[in-house]
Image 1 (cartoon, rainbow, N blue to C red):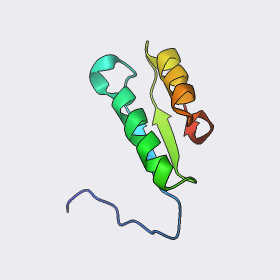
Image 2 (tube, one colour; image 1 turned 90 degrees about the vertical axis):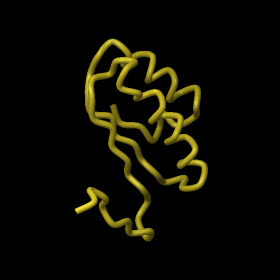
Image 3 (cartoon, rainbow, N blue to C red; image 1 turned 90 degrees about the horizontal axis):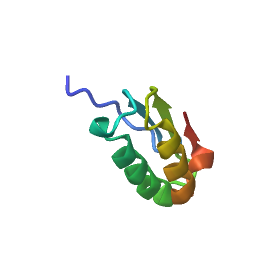
Length: 73
């Protein structure tokens, strides 16, 4: 098994980030990638499961990228 889940392109993408919200985990990179995905798939969603010192900064970054309405923290 590859670990990949088949994608049903009839449904909007829903991405999930799981990890402590610290710089080393790269949640900021996930947000940047999500912004690019959302440009192509406007109904896409991102769920961020975790907590840590970067949470406020990540919420601000999502707002600055214009995707905060599609990100669940």
